[in-house]
Amino acid sequence: MAEAAAQPVVVGLQAVRKAYNAGTAIETEVLHGIDLTVRRGEFCAVVGPSGSGKSTLLNIIGLLDRPTSGLVRVCDEETTLLGDRALTRLRGHNIGFVFQYHHLITAFTALENVMMPMLGAEEFPNQAMRTRAEVLIASVGLAAQMNQGAGNLSGGQQQRVAVARALAMEPALLLADEPTGNLDTRSADEVFSLLRRFNAEHGTTVLFVTHNVTMAQRCDRTIEVIDGQVTA
Image (cartoon, rainbow, N blue to C red):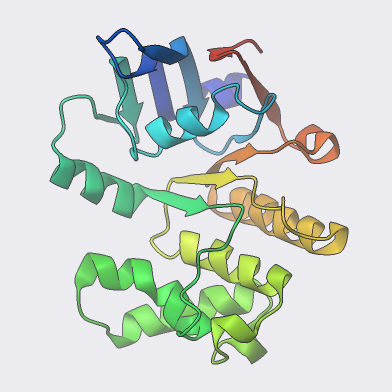
């Protein structure tokens, strides 16, 4: 416990509220004053019933949405007052995303999909980008498929490409929102094992949203969200 406490804070939320249609007669508050600290290297399951606020919480941590009030610190950066351009840069360089649906560009090869975050950051492709993408594709077990069109891969292979793409910028934080929800048991286990391996080898902090009790139990820590509040 002392070793974990010594690790830097990657996610720090203080009294975070999120309301839609704020200030109107139909205001709906989804998150109710959440306090949360997640440190470097933690592998956390995020669990809770549908509609509990898990995805909203992940969107705020991932800088895809802003809180109505409260403080959000990500990778040692206070984000509350940052402009859109600064948020985009912070997100692009420090946070990786894996969603339930892979969101690959099916007209591109697996390799080109993995290169996309690096192209977004640097604008022009170079050999270093290609080399890193090749290493990542190989690390998820798809070296033989790297030049295949993404649309020709199986669902499990596509999700492994999505994991490699999420790690392209060597992010400190990886947000995985039901990444195994559309996969068969074997493919789901392969994707989960990949995330665990990258967490162990690179110290990547992982927030893994899941309804799968067995997978949640394989995580180091469980963050339970019920009715817009963190309860455990």
